[in-house]
Image 1 (cartoon, one colour):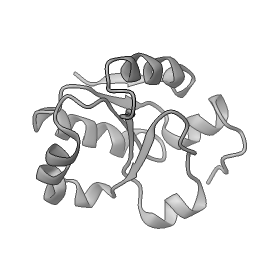
Image 2 (cartoon, rainbow, N blue to C red):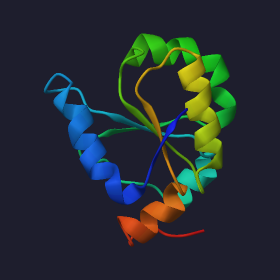
Image 3 (cartoon, rainbow, N blue to C red):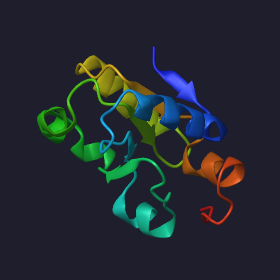
Image 4 (cartoon, one colour):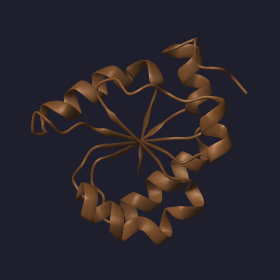
Length: 121
């Protein structure tokens, strides 16, 4: 089962995840929204790396993700309201990724709980 992470708890998760990584390596927020959604509203990198990869491209790029990140790299999946990202998080976990969480409520909840400057749509 995929852990559901409230955006308000993200900073603590990020810091715990980063503690287990090399100093120059950061946890990843995998934004699975469409490019137009990313242009409308996006999180700002802050102690994490942002990787934009639309949900429809994840299956064809799974091997690339494994090669680039490794299966133990901490990943927090993000979408608009948390449903697409939950599906991707489950897919990644079934594909062998061990450190995957879903940002519950998506970027909409992020705006409400973390950064009100991120536009809602």
